[in-house]
Length: 444
Ligand SMILES: Cc1cc2nc3c(=O)[nH]c(=O)nc-3n(C[C@H](O)[C@H](O)[C@H](O)COP(=O)(O)OP(=O)(O)OC[C@H]3O[C@@H](n4cnc5c(N)ncnc54)[C@H](O)[C@@H]3O)c2cc1C
Image (cartoon, rainbow, N blue to C red; front, side, top):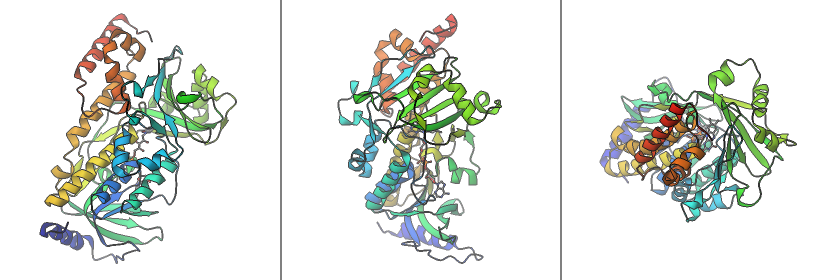
């Protein structure tokens, strides 16, 4: 796609990149300059790199981990299907041996299970079925695919900073696995560093706090209870009996189940004198169904704690740069929307960049052109997340009162959030919560 304006941009990138005090070498990279440099090889970065490379751009994807690495975020939403297809990786995902996920089910604090939300009740297409994934394997598969689609993928490289010429991003400074510092030029830089937030931290971007100050304590179990047949891979969300926290139960391949508890950060972690394993098992004691499911199973990962994960950066793109995935925003783990939104925003960014390369426009407004569309979908997820944490909401109770909204709930749970208008649904959610608040309680 060569043209004068792109060449001019490349000259800016080259001259701005080399401050006199450094001695840059090419560090074994295929080129000193790329159309697109993607920082971070999670789902958002691999989606952006694969789709940009398939569209004809020269792409470098840089990931700091040397090899497959454990990550949380194991349950996918069905609508990931479409981005995986655009990345050219769908067939490999189908054949990778991940556990099939057909539904999600909620247990109230009284221990009562909702009817499972089967995704194919609203969608007969094969995209109604999705997967529960070991993220180390999934992320490797997506990065390998980016490479097969034509991106240069380099692992073991940590990007230290994004380079700017004035306000225009023009490349990155990288620490290679050999300990060498290398500067590379790019017409567009995609920040897909997840909660690392490379550009937002460097630019001190203002953050919106969603007011969802939650923490999670989680681990893996070998040999825990599994349903048979198509319910084997269901995600189960279970409230503890005091309603103060909830568990996820995500069956993975190799007879492993991912189990985590999420609760108010202050109450669960900050104000607690307990060690993480004591916190976890104290919460298990408050959830008979989880206790039953892991009885006799063997814990096969150390417990891990995460907190401060919900936010949105208020600036989404600048001249020559764009944020995707968690580097832009993460809402909450409850509906497993993180990987879906990471893939989708990576796809949207790649398409904006490809069009920008064609029209010589890599401005903030071009690279961030999808913000309103992405935000619309995120708002639907965020609205249902807020309902979940409201003491005056339960899925069972709400749907008994408003059965016409089964479709809206299922659409949000599968990630079909970009086309539909959910305003009538959220009006009725507010009405139901108000009625519950007026009565003082809601039955599950
Ligand atoms: C408790 C919890 C449970 C969750 N459960 C789910 C779930 O069940 N389902 C779901 O869909 N989502 C879940 N999520 C969210 C999910 O984990 C994230 O939304 C998702 O991983 C975001 O993908 P990403 O590509 O934006 O970032 P990441 O997957 O975090 O990838 C970022 C990559 O960038 C690399 N990187 C960072 N800095 C640099 C650098 N300077 N140079 C080079 N590389 C760098 C990192 O090594 C990493 O590989 C959960 C989140 C939490 C906190």
